[in-house]
Length: 270
Picture 1 (cartoon, one colour):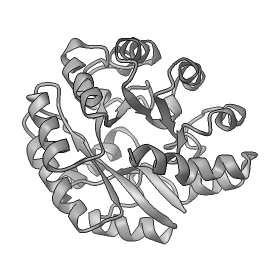
Picture 2 (tube, helix red, strand yellow):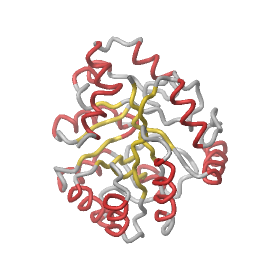
Picture 3 (cartoon, one colour):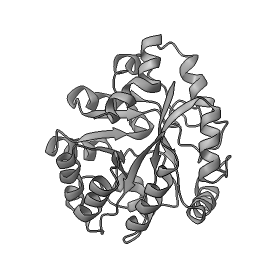
Picture 4 (cartoon, helix red, strand yellow):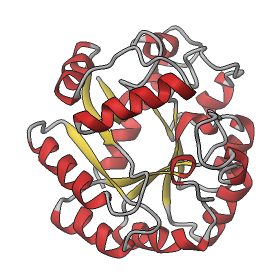
């Protein structure tokens, strides 16, 4: 069984804009398919459940994007819906809609896309709301991948030191750090030692696409808080790459089962 904790779903026009952006500033997206086909392809890889992630790159788009996510997920009972919010939205109102009306499991926020540092006080209402509702925040606030098309340099709006400030202020905040915290993989593992509510997902970090040294020993040690994520469909390589990397690794069978499904099942059943 596989639960993919990092898949991207957007309305068609947003998908097309994102693929064009990646083609200019990052990599050519290999799987340029729309939302229903994404589900079909995930199922073909043995993915039984998947977390639906998207993000708002400007104020005012969260409401319609979250409505789209809600309606899309009604078609697919295996979907685990996350909402989107922008720092200039009425954050508490957006969270109320996401959690009380739509019953989403969490929120995705991307500091590179939003061009705001995670420890900026404008985001405190987001963290307060996540704690209040006891939901999960997937916060892309590691410095990688650093792409030229962002509004701000990534080290101005991300990094382990800034995330540490957030966790110290909101220690009960349930946070998933994507990409194993790339490009600061070691320091984010250190942060996991201090904060038991910090999880990480494997997204793209195990693919060999980026020059990262994979700390398999630390993945084993913290395998109770590591989640499998693919970033599908916005990847430049064959979609089973990271599944095969985990299956062919030195990780114990128990650690692999934790990463592929047990951790996600436990985290999202709350």
